[in-house]
Image 1 (cartoon, helix red, strand yellow):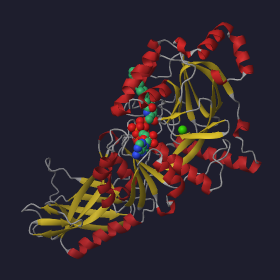
Image 2: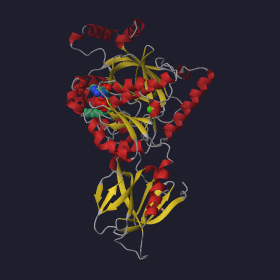
Image 3: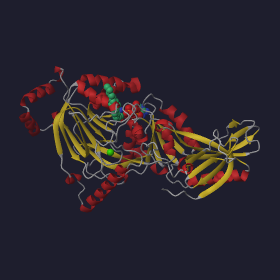
Image 4: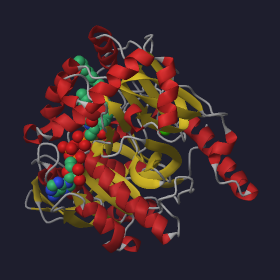
Length: 555
Ligand SMILES: CCCCCCCCCCCCC/C=C/[C@@H](O)[C@H](COP(=O)(O)O)NC(=O)CCCCC
Ligand SMILES: Nc1ncnc2c1ncn2[C@@H]1O[C@H](COP(=O)(O)OP(=O)(O)O)[C@@H](O)[C@H]1O
Ligand SMILES: [Ca+2]
């Protein structure tokens, strides 16, 4: 149990017309209603509130004049006639309050003091405590995509986020993007990153993808690492990234915070949360293509994305229509998947346990990963292929998905791979083989219910550190020869269809959906880079089950 930390201040203050014992320690601000009579009063239970100092947003001085109270920002708030006539000094504490479904709100409480010096002492003491929190950002670089989701990015930022940043004393440099890849290119070459404590992305998964591409690329160049080499150990990015959800799916925000709510995200940024996250690098023939943090999907999700881009005018609803269309189209694709299973780690894709705030699996596997990386460096064996057995699967697939995190989103609150971890250095490779439409529907529907989407004969899932995919139309002659021997009759039909796509049968290849962006190459080599980036988040919080003994109100 954490020891209650030393008291900084203890005073009798008033909240509205009631007297409270208010105490400030290094970790908590607590206000307990004074019980005037020791006799038990059923209608007046003792009330105690406690806020962790780390979740205080700011403290503000209030001034009274002619029945109104002036705030530091210059605005006036009318106070009630009866209220604190004798108390001339007041201060307001703004703090994080938890609401339903992982949402956070900025709550406030105003304390009135009997004298001015005491009020000033309280304000400066709270500010001093806040100043000791070094993880809080002071200056942020903000990119807004005005074009994503329902095109509300600018409004969301100005109305919901900017006022909170101002209250918390966070200064910002805001760039509203003017074209696709504006943010990526600005980060790659122009942005003066030394000036900032973090980058904020206002947009969806596609916009987040732009930000990480700019940031990761810049970090590699600054550290002399070649991003084109798939076997390079990439340098981790020091700047944290905050996501203000303003896109269509916003799965990266949902899976790291538990909700898609701009105010909640802004508060996680203000309190300086930190959540490491794995990043996959995607290469083709030793040439870098893209990075991915959530879904890499070939077949169904690739086709949905390609089709939906033509319907962007519909906003987020485009995915529902394209999803239905692609489900009915029921295309399958042939190819070869090879993968390196993740060895020595804790956790499997079929676990009941979930990746949550402070996840021990991520901590353990992250540690294992960095120890291995060190020993590779010492042995001068940077090629991680040497420590595992590649496995190969050939087949016809409706979908090939790699989920580096759960990919939970409002459409599927448990996600594509519910037990995947944010920062364990692995990705869950999900292979959905050719099956009937009915069976595929059963699989899809299970993403929205408690049933296990992997518990079906045509679905398999592997936790991997690296994988490759080669569509059949790209296979070499010798590989095709091997396939021919396996199934000569089918092979002939497939060849005919590839050569004559107008025949109306299934297309030979799909495309990859890489965090919501379409990849032009189909043959890819994917490698997970453990904890390469950090977000202003803390993972999804578990609701408290037991009484928290570190909470002064519980003692
Ligand atoms: C018939 C019932 C079907 C129910 C299917 C539910 C399965 C949903 C799983 C969704 C996983 C989403 C993974 C996230 C992908 C995003 O990166 C990507 C881009 O997001 P954004 O930039 O914010 O638009 N979104 C998609 O690819 C949409 C997939 C929708 C599939 C129906
Ligand atoms: N100013 C802009 N104009 C057009 N496209 C942009 C602009 N800024 C960013 N983009 C691109 O918009 C695409 C979608 O962005 P995103 O924020 O993910 O929204 P959505 O979730 O609706 O797809 C991304 O590919 C991004 O590169
Ligand atoms: Ca992972």
